[in-house]
Image (cartoon, rainbow, N blue to C red):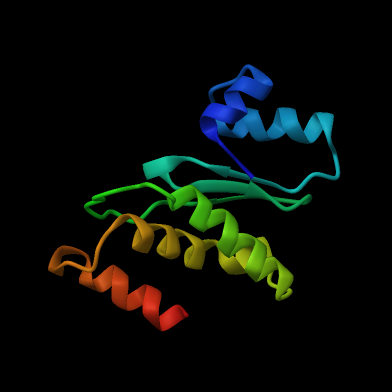
Length: 116
């Protein structure tokens, strides 16, 4: 798992799909999750490239949002879930980390709590 800044550093490319294809060419067995901030995330499970857009919310503090995504991913993969299974949950979990449960984000918090 890496973010787009780390991906550019490692590959020399800024385009997310190009970052993933370059890493897959170097490491064919690698499963890759590329976080894209407010644009969502992309991942390659070894066979197929997936994209999940980010939810539109008013972020107050994004501290630990990436760490939350990493922790949620590891926990769900340990439970036997696939990357495709967990993408919506991970995006929701990350948003819940960055947005306190104010009225403007109540729907997102309700969605997150129902998934837990």
